Image (cartoon, rainbow, N blue to C red; front, side, top):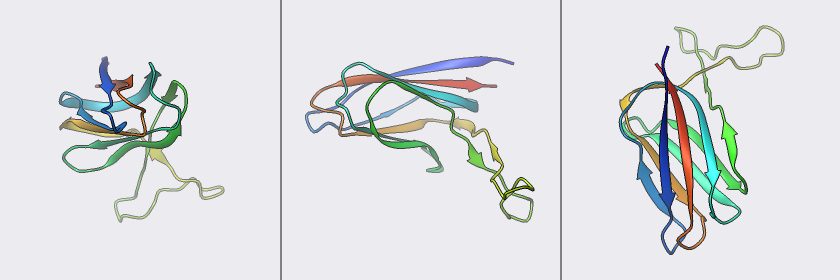
Length: 123
């Protein structure tokens, strides 16, 4: 089993916004690590699969470096949500990425500020 890291440095424009892409990725998302350089407090991130638009990570008002382990809801072959028997809690699985780029949109990052996203991919 191989785990690869994709490090994506991001610098926002004078409006505090940026749109950047990873290289093509094959595998399952393990984690997203945001490393704050000098983005303003309250920065917003939306990371989606470029081809399908599936959301990989979306969080608003991030103030400090953070690690996230995004997961997606799973379903039965009939399309019903898979739930744990007790309490009806959703079953979640890792997000598969099949040769697509991830689109990273940053808003409210300050004026010409920067940070880095690190994606760990298994497979």
